[in-house]
Length: 106
Image 1 (cartoon, rainbow, N blue to C red):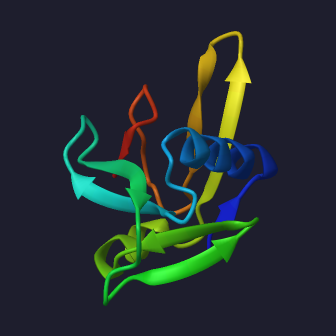
Image 2: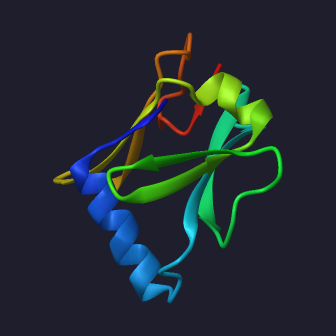
């Protein structure tokens, strides 16, 4: 299971509308790379793949492939907008360490 905060869900719906993809779902995955070894990727997909796990969270469909699900189970996706900038923030209880920018983990 994953958590999508109210602010993240609102931003995702806003972006889907701006990109004319109202029926899409949010694809979350983990790939090799980044300064800590693994990094997050997010984007919009029109539909889930055959081996994807689909979550309906806070009015947003989220697609996660089987390999990434190992790393993303229990994550909390938030959207912050403050003095230091705006963007999505992933809180991952499975990460043993993260890099300074927060975009990669191990």
